[in-house]
Amino acid sequence: MAGTVYVLDDYYLAITLLITVAYQLIFFSVAFTFKFDKLTDFAGGTNFVVLAIITLAFSGHHGARQIVASLFIMVWGIRLSGFLLFRILKTGKDDRFDDKRDKFFPFLGFWVFQMIWVWTVSLPVTVLNSPNVQRYPQVPFGTGRDIAGIILFAIGFIMESVSDVQKFIFRQRNDKTAICDKGFFYFSRHPNYFGEIIIQFAIYMIAVSAAADGYVGGQAVKALYATIFGPFFLTILLMFVSGLPLSERPGAKKRYEKGMNWEGYKKYLERTSILIPFPPQIYGRLPVILKRTLFLEFPMYVFDPAKHADGATGQRSAEEGQGAGGARQSGEQLTGAH
Image 1 (cartoon, helix red, strand yellow):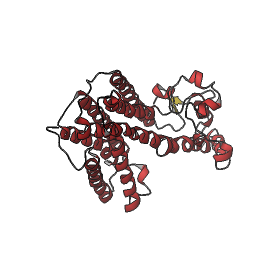
Image 2 (cartoon, helix red, strand yellow; image 1 turned 180 degrees about the vertical axis):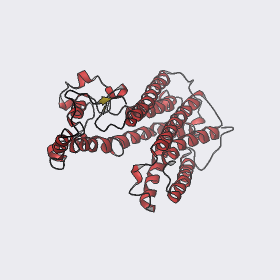
Image 3 (cartoon, helix red, strand yellow; image 1 turned 90 degrees about the vertical axis):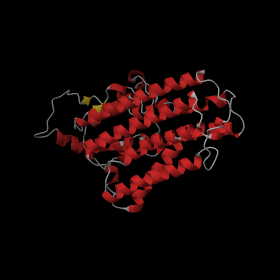
Image 4 (cartoon, one colour; image 1 turned 90 degrees about the horizontal axis):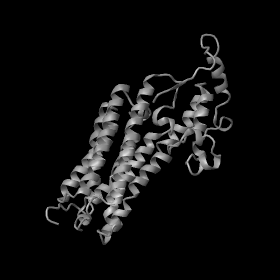
């Protein structure tokens, strides 16, 4: 197609991988050399923006679908990287790297994983902008899938952005016994994760719409459909690797063992969906089997004091907290906005 730049392969997979590796290694060298935490997440979010701009510029054909999908991932990346940069500037350092900041290969391992995350989640936009897809006449933008994708993106973006701010404000209170159950956190324990998942599936829906309506043929159809691996990878990452597993059971265990309003938090867990927003008045009455299946609250997330606690420290800490100098008024509500 006239104006299209062909680089290494017909789907821009190699060039985007090389750009991602180089981009992350540059930031890694700064972070490791100066023991500087403030650019780590910023490097991840802005990498999405760089890939979208480059592939859109290379494509030579700027149809509405390309522009919308590319713009959506750029807006998401800018918002995410900006927020995370602001947060780290406020907090000072990232505790995730306390055990690896001075160790070359363990620290590099995090950046390699970030490379994989960026390149994989960018796949729907990368392939949509690629020469092998753009050589086909594109269906006019505005199909039912396109509209659904735009609506889902708006819902996910609002949910993720607002809940990030709600949690940040909540943490500024520095009250370890408070429970974040206001705003979006009234309906979900992790609305920011849910919003991020919805965003990526919305972008995929827009990117694949032309193939679904038969306006793209050959191997390009398979390539577009295969990019669903991007949003699925993000979902798996949040649900089984770096998201829920690191916050659910460990967070409950910490509250129980340190006597940080465990009883109140236990009630919050029972009435609030782990991921999918749902009215707590209904969720709290659902059978456990539905929570463990339909609402994705798998046993791996559930904290059982009898199995997972280190002794009776939770009860002891709670009793000490109510002793001399630590008494609380009965009936005090320890909940706060997020």
